[in-house]
Length: 172
Ligand SMILES: Nc1ncnc2c1ncn2[C@@H]1O[C@H](COP(=O)(O)OP(=O)(O)OP(=O)(O)O)[C@@H](O)[C@H]1O
Ligand SMILES: [Mg+2]
Image (cartoon, rainbow, N blue to C red; front, side, top):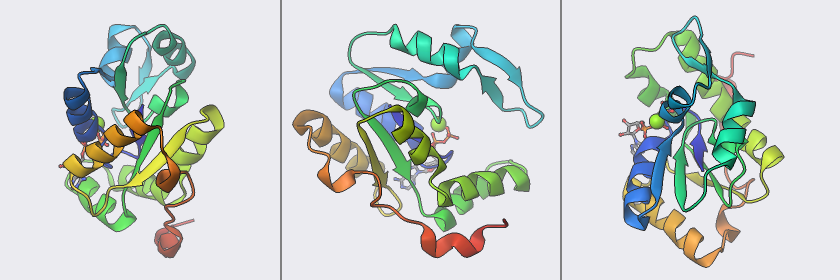
């Protein structure tokens, strides 16, 4: 499972990882649409996916799969990778999308507060986080491939990435 705040690079990393490992690639939004798991489209145009049903459907899958999406960490997996990006860089990336300021702020704040990482460790036991701020997609993929092969997660256990120095960006 490749999860993380929007804009952290999930789709790019998942695509290359699946290609290099020869794993099947599942994009959660497409999967949810294909399996009737969409509850509604919210006022900002984002899909609202039924997380419980998603988990059930993903659990039915077998074989080697890379799952891409910011709900991926709610599903059971051998390994959950949470991609992290410095809030300043993430904000710049999200500003280049046609998103409302409120949606951008909400996501940058979620990144600062480790929201996805915390959700991931509540659901799954093997969770790692990778700070991709200064890495290109290829090097992130190579770190994840090595982890899958060696089952050595030491340097990437949750708690290594901290955006505490960015707390002044919070509007709370
Ligand atoms: N490691 C990286 N270094 C520099 N830029 C990156 C890196 N990873 C992704 N990007 C850039 O960040 C942007 C977002 O990447 P991507 O679409 O993969 O994010 P995402 O996490 O899948 O977002 P979403 O949740 O909205 O689908 C892209 O413009 C991509 O080029
Ligand atoms: Mg994506």
